[in-house]
Length: 502
Ligand code: ADP
Image (cartoon, rainbow, N blue to C red; front, side, top):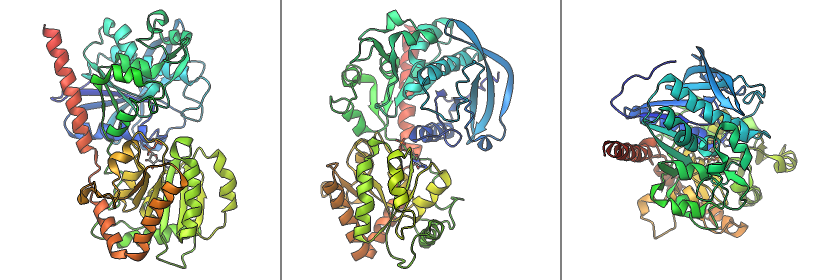
């Protein structure tokens, strides 16, 4: 195995189920790549461990190669072999674990949604730690993400620290507390954890079902640092209404729990260099934006009769969290207000009916799939961007939209509340106001925000253009957020060193 070079900074290893652009379902993938790159730029040694999925974008890892080692890891009472691959993604060294287990855990044509997800990812969490142990790496920070790699925290302290992989601190980031990885308590034994020790209220036992264990709760209890992806969401999940059953655990561990707003990858999302766009453009030269709008209309066969007609975009997983009924309402309301609507939505079951209903409509196009390149062209072409989420841990689309000069219309919740500030809100200093927001998650709430946006767009084009220029200049890069992680990591490592000396 490749040994780590010495570096004056910290050695950080992310163990995750996603990383953009090779294996991305949503924001988690963006964060692993964006935070990783930002920390690497600050002089830290950052490595990533991912499952080797059959459905990855292999063309984004041109130097992928198999290492000449066999990694054995424990599961269900015996050892299984794993093949380990290494490659560079976005300039970051990535290890891909391919289990040679008969169940072909990552050979399923999709990332998640399999019956045995709990098994697949508890296997992967253990194999990732085994990789660190056997390669002799001594990371300062092992950063795991979401329930899929939450197992890393208890595995590390219960099994791997005693085996000598004890140089590091564990950071756990929860990107969405809706998904907690619960299972019958006995299933925890497969990856070698001690069910009897861990199925206790102060450890991994689910707070509402006592015969079940909860992976995210385990990571909250066993990690040194616990973060989530925005300050407002960190507050919301500490309440009974927003905590998805984990509020008491988070309150008990509140000293190590913080919310840090995600950044966006400012290189991947840059209208001045974006190769997916017909014409590149920037805050000071926005002519290209209009050309991208025209190009998208042509590609999607939308009417170009009225050049000025505003284009409303929405790019999302179509799941209840995202306010699916409000997205549907926004489509009809846009039409009434004289705009055009383009939806790019994945996981779309309930939208198939209305997508075909609007198949040849002049002003509406619903595209029900995941399509990265199309997403870039929609951000660039749209004037406004709808995000009516019921809850939103951070949300990236509002920030990407702003970088591309599309004004967000967003519900005031979670990270949206920390990044979208209403142009008419007198309590917010003028220089921070950057979009339209509404509090009540119903049609009236959304209507009010949409009407105000359309009013400014149609009746005050000069002010609208000023707003577009302003939002394009906001710095949503990872720089600030990565500095906050850096500080948390450093403090935790320093505390560990002091403790080791005493
Ligand atoms: P979540 O992680 O809940 O899906 P985020 O707003 O944090 O939501 O991140 C969404 C990311 O996924 C953004 O980069 C967005 O552009 C992308 N995305 C969402 N749906 C699609 C889709 N259907 N096609 C392409 N990209 C998508």
